[in-house]
Length: 360
Length: 143
Image 1: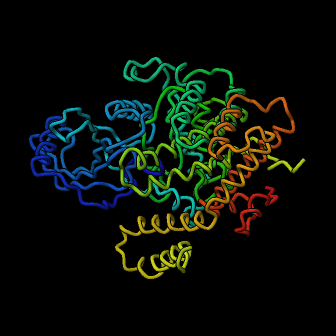
Image 2: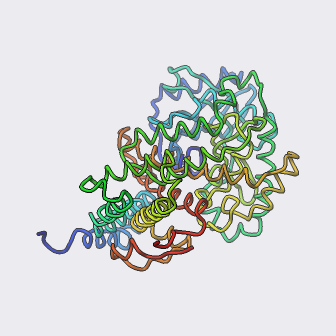
């Protein structure tokens, strides 16, 4: 999941290796799905950045049908190994469609298929949006500076729109019932993971204990993106062009997404800017509250921010597990495990703000 | 007894060659991986410099916490016991133990970050100029 998992740039970095038969099968699928008389796949390259999912830039010419003409698309499918909690591609496609219909700025979803004869595994097709999502660039780029508070407010509005999607939804019936995805279930999951992990993590245990003893009251469930943060949205200049990476979406507490967006793990080059490393919280909160009408409870956000640091630490460890135990030869994944200790420092700073106690 | 230059100094030199001689010769798409390689070498270098010392020092602190009951136990076992006790809130009724536990958590975390990502530590307001393990474990840092 680390700062990747979706098309991050217009620039294809690696040439894909799909056979002529594979291209032809994809072209036939696109033609049938769009009602085109014919489709020619003119470009197909793997996009770098898919830590959990694999993304391919597809250029295609449609003769007739709903997408007539040249189209710039993305094919999204699963990487060889992933994180167990993520949705499958057809489920992610359904969530993306729901978000698109709710007016959230997302790449327009087009088609999905679980037919293994087309691409070897389930996939979906969406529009390729322009821009870049590189978090370190967004949080460092001096040219973006004046626009960042406005972008934070816009992101608040986008999140509020996501949270207008609420159960029950027959098209999202595969999402777990809300009571099963609240903090208690996550806490159980964190501990189960730590029980399997070869190295004890005392700070995480301490933080999880705090979470367990400070559970917030239940709230009306909404659709949570569950990975709404800098690095998972595309900017074309200063224009937001797409919220990406919906694979962790599920019903939950609206404050969970706010805590995740603001937690230190996602501030990149600007730890001082508490809203995603791009601004202070005020513009982000203002956008959220003015779009959705729901007021933000800072204490609730604090709980979810602590949980965010625990969750990010566990995900970081799981990422390095993919190298250590999953056989994925990937230095980026291997190094991500080291970030768990950064999260542990943040847990200490949040819950023990006076710092290390002096000797007795 | 090993020959000189030491492993850490070889790693430091190799990293310098990678970043300052080889990086500019690499195509753009290979540079991110090269930076990750350089980062890995830096972590390995810092860990090699303090090999053993960190675990032993934390084990001593844990032995103190457990009032020597666990003397002779391996550091890994003590750490596992510590993690379990934190999970069940074992120190909540003893202010001295709770204080010692928090001290160990801070020491463990900042020491590990000193090796893995000292820049992150500095960015969070922790001033840590030394590399000596004993100093590292008693830095007296404050936010």
